[in-house]
Each structure stands twice: as C-alpha cells, then as structure tokens.
Image (cartoon, rainbow, N blue to C red; front, side, top):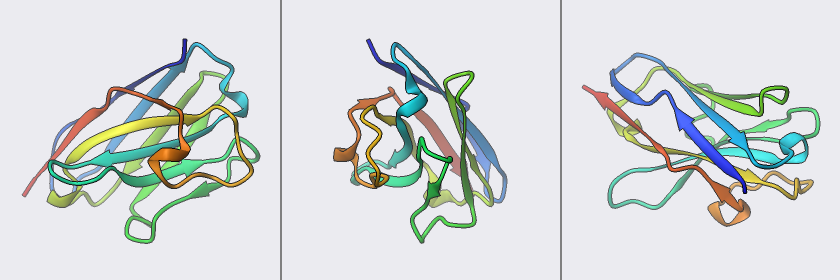
Length: 126
C-alpha cells in the first residue's frame, strides 16, 4: 500500500523560508515521478513543483520559479520542497504526490498523480 507522509509545515513570518519533506513507502519509488501541490481555502489545488525519476529533471510553474526548489533522495524514498521568500499568499496545505507509472512527461495537474499524502499546513504571517 502506497503511503506518502508530509512533514515540516508550520507558522512562518513573511520573508522567511521553509523546508518540507515527504516520506514515501509501500512501493518502489525509484521510477516514480514526484510532485508537490498546494491548496488554499476556497481555491483549487495548485501545482508547485515536480521531479522526474530520470535524471531528476525538475519543473515549476512560472509564478513560483526562483522561490521553490524540489529535490529527492531515492535511497531514503524522500522528496523535499524548499520555499524561500515566503509570502502570506503562500499559505496553504501542501501535498506530496506520486505518479507511480513514471511517465516521460512530468504531470503538472492533480489528475496526473495517483497517490497523495494527507498534507501539511503552511501558514505565512505578514
């Protein structure tokens, strides 16, 4: 059974940084594409970052590029998200996601992923 568990959320002051972690279990994630999404109250789930299983290629939305960095440690079945220069509008629940099939093109929509964590709350105070 695939399980993704996020950690590292919390309350941060605007301008600060935060590092989120996601631990994956229940499957061989060596060939899985992994991603981060976020969802603020009343809004749709938003793509934040993704990393390919081949060569660790990464993609980010233009709105976040330069402030977020995704990385992975295959030996530990973990992925990470570093967020810098945090803003109040970054406040959301952040979700880790896995695409077990490891398609050639990194998915950027929630529908492209088949496993999800329970999420971790990030709150940015102004």
